[in-house]
Image 1 (tube, rainbow, N blue to C red):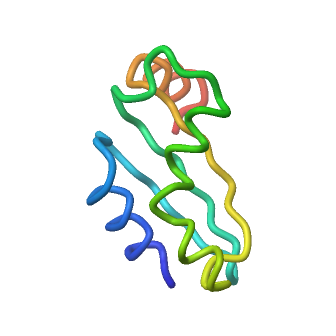
Image 2: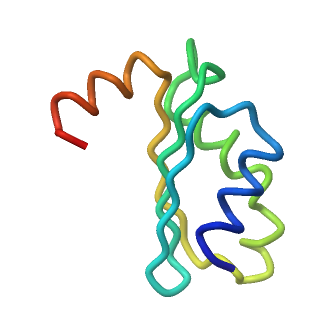
Length: 84
């Protein structure tokens, strides 16, 4: 499993505006941006991201996942303040 595959799975299954994925060995880091995250807490956002990846996690194709999920307004603030 690689970053492009994870990105494709997420974009195919979720209404996201942007997705950034990086891997270090089997550890996956995801930044997801989408309007779907408005009015959701962090746990709800993580559940949404985990759902389409669960089979790959259970098959040990992905060992661990680090998720940062933002709505577009939050992402713009983060993007500007962190120079991402």
